[in-house]
Length: 142
Image 1 (tube, rainbow, N blue to C red):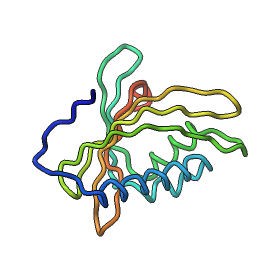
Image 2 (image 1 turned 120 degrees about the horizontal axis):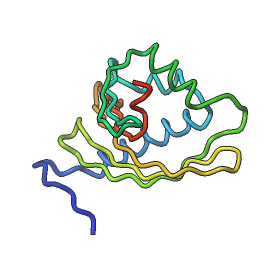
Image 3 (image 1 turned 45 degrees about the vertical axis):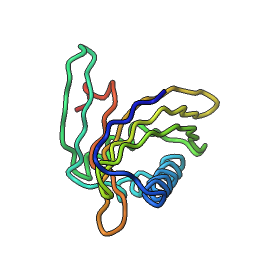
Image 4 (image 1 turned 90 degrees about the vertical axis):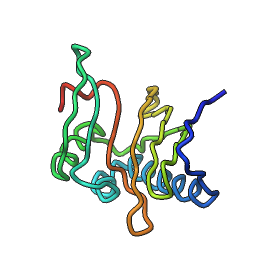
């Protein structure tokens, strides 16, 4: 049984559909290593929350240039697409704010890796954009 906190807002079918569509678009850009398009889908400065190799919590704010540089390095070179199989659990705080928990399997060149992370998304001008990324293991790079 999944526990979702009562935020006082009940998401509509349209809320969930628009969020799912945003993630489908983002995953497609990620799969093609289109880091510039990924950056187009963010709000900068972007907040990052993680931990480092010493198990200390870390946080940072990245501008677009830092995001593009870091994600280009992380996504790596290559012509083969990256695939994602994800289960997402959104918690809508309002019609324009959501915290989304994701369990995902990322596969590149036949090698799979399990990911668990959370994102905070904002809707501005009718479009979702991510503003905060929360994932373990990035802290040494912050």
